Image (cartoon, rainbow, N blue to C red; front, side, top):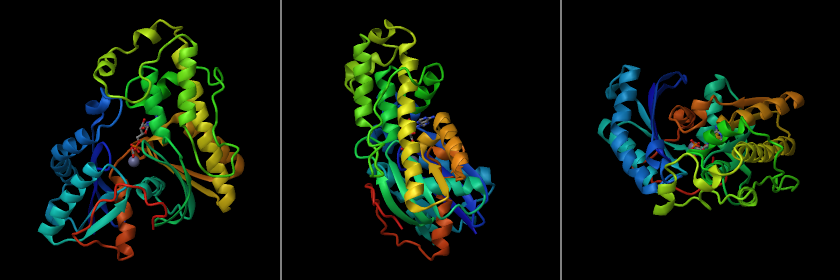
Length: 361
Ligand code: KG4
Ligand code: ZN
């Protein structure tokens, strides 16, 4: 059996062709990074329009790479939750059109479960039951995953997602979007102990995260050093957009050259401490020995190294997907194979569900 999986939840248009034995025949990702860079964040309306332009060429490219025709596809899987409403709709409508015209089943994919399933795809073997940590631009959630389709919500961010904090702090530091990768690059030259930034909720019993205070602390540190920072927050005001064209805005460029790397490294360290600390607490709380980590922020080298270190120390089996399966992709949509096995196919009136449903399963 051959599946076509589609992913359009945020700002990547992706298609993959996978078999029911989880062999990946093709994977194509069209990134919209360039389109959103000047705004310092994803603009939903621009994202959905770009999906509309990209979806058919991306599907064609995936079929071409897999060397198969649409007639050979047995089912279409599509992420219909959570995500940006307009973006989700493009993928869902494309999937429905193919299913309707070919008379083949439609399979719904939960994007967050799929991020954890990326670990299963990379491992090449079962990784469940496990604790799942999803750290992306929109989510920082911990789950007890009894199986690929049985997720129990343990905790999540009460304000900004980890990736969102990376993107916003990068904007303040005058670093290009997407912020995660630029902060990681800048941090490589900085001292992670230069600034003692807060680790909110780290000692709290709840398995929740909070990154907005950390973001504010970085802003005060910039101001304390005599800089204004580039933008007070993610904003798309015209004046700010103009400023973003130069690599370092004037208030920051006049400051010591070590400031940005030190702030980036100290910020990154604080986020990593919180993510690692809560993931370990979740393992303990659920008496689990397997940790799976997915989502764009899981591409971060420092986070991966720290997780690796702690997992070894505690004899925990750690699965972090390779970076190209951490950021949004359609290979992780192979979770649809599990749904098909469980007899879970959808009617063609399936709708998008932009918000997070806590206990998916
Ligand atoms: O999972 P993803 O591709 O899309 C969502 O579902 O949100 O995650 C995108 C997020 C962005 O906020 C981006 O800044 C962050 O992942 N990211 C990183 C790194 N690469 C991407 N954050 C930290 N370090 C990285 N290397
Ligand atoms: Zn994602």
